[in-house]
Length: 213
Ligand code: AMP
Image 1: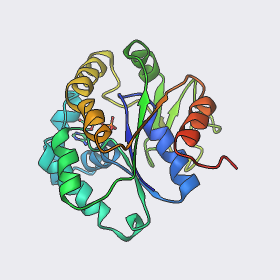
Image 2: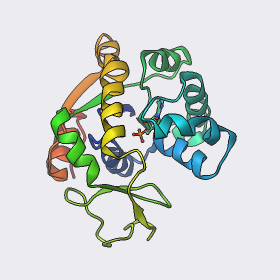
Image 3: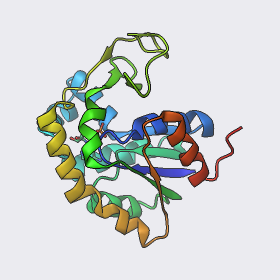
């Protein structure tokens, strides 16, 4: 399965990506996580990307396309992958097509704007491995720590009301048109991002024809 996850910030793409990744035994490629890592490690990429992330804007297409192409060329992507947060513009989608990478499906997770701010204010992520949580809808079984690696759970810097509003505007302007792009290729399936994680998971598995056992 070569899958793209699409949806506004806070729709639960990262959470669904993790669940699907374990179920299907394929890697998740999260451009947001790759960029945040690069910023933490103060690499050249991180230094170039930092201002865009903190301002809620998109990192220039050429930078992101380059890191995704490199990542997709690795062995663990040969049998499939889940792209979380890429493509985010038509230019990126065209670049992916042009690189010869074939995508099977685009899963669009729909969440109304009104609920995004509330959702994102409860979001946490592991400082070490990036696993996403939500204090109400997807709490860690290990309390204040990551249930996978024991890392510290933190709020993302761009999850503040002002930046969230900018990210939503950017999503509607630049990313949502991708639905039409892949719609023409007959690849889009849509689900509702529900409050209860298990309800969304059920819908996602059924939309992708994945056995729940
Ligand atoms: P995310 O973790 O997917 O919410 O991404 C966090 C931030 O990383 C976004 O607000 C952008 O600044 C940047 N970013 C992630 N993916 C992309 C992408 N495909 N194109 C451009 N910028 C991106």
